[in-house]
Length: 100
Image (tube, rainbow, N blue to C red):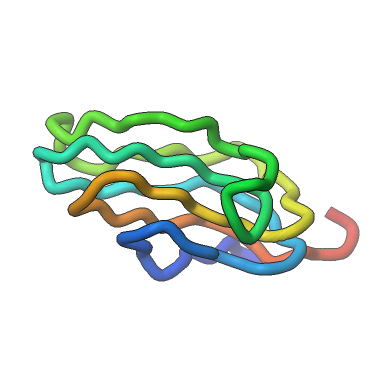
């Protein structure tokens, strides 16, 4: 099964609720405002961090992000915390599968 990309988020929110595999993310900025992003295993910001808190340089232009070489299992879901404005993040994920 090919991983999916979430609908781009512009504010903190749940990407997926339930067992899921995380495969990375793409981050677009306005070129001015540096967003801070944290991604959690869970449905809020109290879960295990799967992407540590990081501030991305908006002046770098183009897309920022990370693509995992392999999928990371999340037991509860994927939650993205966004601090900042004028940012979009699309998360790559795959719903829980048998025999992965």
